Amino acid sequence: MNVMGSKMFELHSLIPKQFNSTIEELKGNCNLRLMKYRVPEINKDCGIGLAPHTDKTTLTILCQNEVQGLEVLTKTNQWIKLNIPQGGFVVFVGDILKAWSNGRLHAATHKVKMFGDKERYSVGLLSNPKNDVKIEVPHELVDQKMHPLRYRSFYYGDYLDYFCSTFKENALDAFIGI
Ligand SMILES: O=C(O)CCC(=O)C(=O)O
Ligand SMILES: [Fe+2]
Image (cartoon, rainbow, N blue to C red; front, top):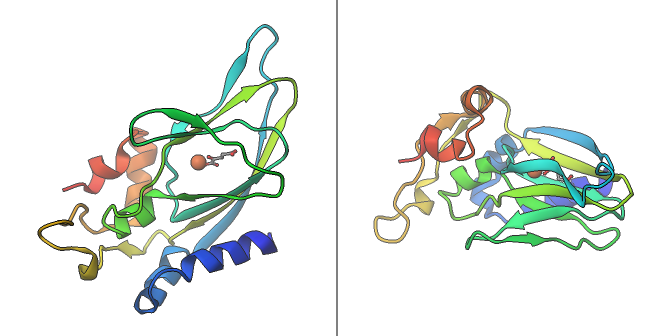
């Protein structure tokens, strides 16, 4: 937990200082989640462990036992299997950082597919804003030529409500896309 927390700190410190207070708000709520994935049924080569999704977080940091299974969708629509070394971490930008950065940071779609005869465990540190935090693209990240405004401002709690009532794959664009 300490290592994951300090990774989160390191990553957030890559963002320019003038955004410090915003970043504090965007990661105000941290949850630790343990996931257990069952061995696929006999006679099945593989099983869906976790359906394709983007995280509804600001940032997610994951580590896992020795059983692989995490796959990521590339921008050219290919699924690639990640081979995560023992003790390694995977970091996903979530929908909130994507929206705040005006889409400059990409929230990758990912899923878990189970193979073989061993259970998989993963631990995720999920950072989210509190529900009443307003997410607004900073004007520094918008320009008319290369980076026109892509997302309207919104409250995190409203976005979660929208997602939980629709479960849309492209919830971010459907909810606040311009
Ligand atoms: O178990 C994993 O490696 C992925 C978990 C995940 O994508 C999630 O909790 O959102
Ligand atoms: Fe995820």
